[in-house]
Amino acid sequence: MRRSESSVGRELLWLLVWIVIFAFCEFMLLKFVVPHHFNDRIAVMIAAIVSGIAMIALRAYVSRRA
Image (cartoon, rainbow, N blue to C red):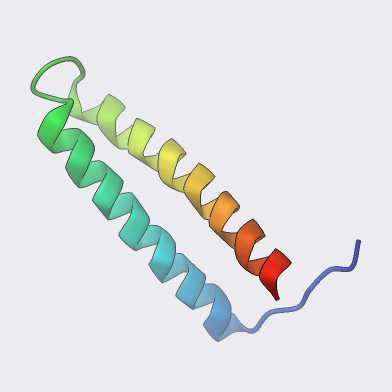
């Protein structure tokens, strides 16, 4: 499998996308899940895991389309 080289700017853009996904997941979990079941630290951890998996899927989708 060929390894693609990306620029620093592109990687920073991907980091920004991950931060947006993470913030959205964290907001939704803190708003809807924390008052009922979990404390806030567990919700932040779950948001990080979910946003990481979403980021892996998004980058795989974009790299296959290119």
